[in-house]
Length: 245
Image (cartoon, one colour):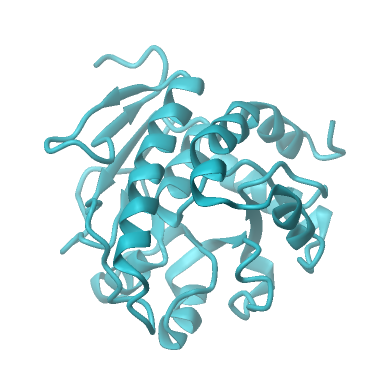
């Protein structure tokens, strides 16, 4: 158990997500577990600051409706208590005068947007992955919460937090007790407008498919009811246990 109660609770709640990640993503993508864990050792994180940030994040998420804004969203959806999203949501939020509670990302974003993240959100969930160990988080350390898809090896990292930036934003919301998570602007087609490079479309499509599958398994493990999307892909809504469907 972690010295930090909220981090210890998260570790327990996310254990099935770690197992789902290893079953669904790790083998398919050929990721090395040990490298993911070792990457965590490079994070300049402080356990006390991490605990304080997570406590505030939990207080602002628990029992609330959260809209997670994806890269294909043209405007912020209405009717949510809290807004969050992957790095791509930051530009839309700033242009709309909307402050995000948190963004999820791993530093593979355009340099312009990278420096905008500090103004776009109250917290930045910065993902540690073995292909971005050399990258630096945005220059607002008091806002950074470090995450990993592997189980956490340190008391300042949220482990088992999901795979891609999109599913990670929803997994964190569920793990911290959101009443409802609405996903807006998520498609199964790669979108790279927020990056400095286009990536490999074939690989990205595969990642999106795995991400959507992992998110559904994470929701089931955390007891959330899944409202599917047509055509199939990312869920449209995730409802907490006991919530009227």
